Image 1 (cartoon, rainbow, N blue to C red):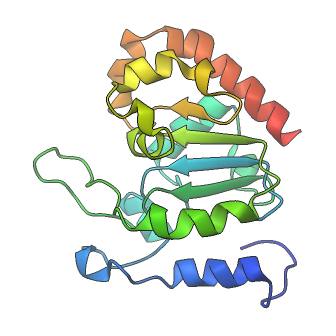
Image 2: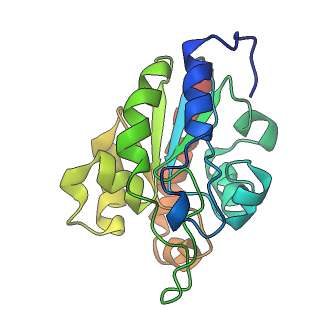
Image 3: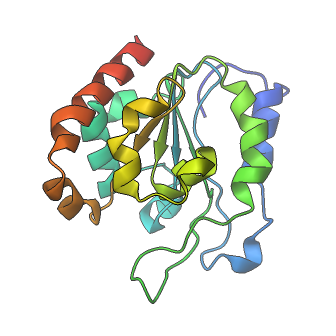
Amino acid sequence: MTGDASPEDPFDRLLAEVRGCTLCAAELPLGPRPIVRGRPAARLLIISQAPGTLVHETGLSFNDRSGDRLRQWLGLDRAAFYDEARVAIIGMGFCYPGRDVKSGGDRPPRPECAPLWHPLLRPHFAAVRLTLLVGTFAIRYYLPDRSKFSMTATLLRWRDFLPAYFVLPHPSWRTTAWERDNPWFAADLVPALRRAVTAALA
């Protein structure tokens, strides 16, 4: 955690509560390790999915290949991305949810996290100029009207959700083929995303 806030600061007390949460401990194969980043001065808020195993091990959001890809989309280097005074990151789930044997991917984010913690955290990020909804779970939670639509259908309408939200797919390896089949993403959406991020952080 960065910044000069006192331990008695309400935001720091809230962060301590979040990071000490054990609500879902019995359901988490690696145990609880809630991960959240950001200071109230942050201008960019990234609402993502849930930590993977490497993020769980290191305690650093998007500290994996999906993070490399997300930073490439945003046009940010690691120093800017991890500057908590500029960028805040909260997940739909704050802890690693475990492996889904059937799909080969991770389980969905735990459903308890967002309803419990997001309403308490987000008011502290009053300086945010741009909010990114990264992945299906974040999009469906904050844009419930899009729940019946495919990710592609929602992303094709990305302009409709501005200025409140910028919607993005989850930057995992599974998106590689999707990007190749949808060249408009790199040609149109990514340049607009980088401009929006630059403006938000200016």
